[in-house]
Image (cartoon, rainbow, N blue to C red):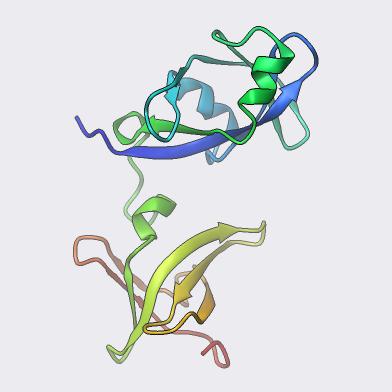
Length: 168
């Protein structure tokens, strides 16, 4: 069993005065965050038994057994929630968890190093790779589509990109 943790959500703050919390889920199916309970803090020191109460704009209202007051809920604002990787479903061959892409080397179709994946973001129109250029603080943004990134090789730690004209 792997002890690698994946961030599946975050506590956005208190909701009401009875210790309920606003939860932001990072799961593809937002409600799935509840199925990975108990969740942990990043350092693994705190465990949270999460129960979703109802959806709200931008997330969910949830209860955590260990939280019974607004003050306790407020104290957890900003805490990221982690699940063990083994709890998450396996993905089809052409899908990836963001955490698997971060750190991969990015090569162009000619084999030239473009940099490494710094972050992956989804702003609603599709996933975007932020690529850290080697030896500089400069980054470039690449759409994470099959046309722009035709090859992802997790075992080799690299992906091949064909950046759109003007991206570099």
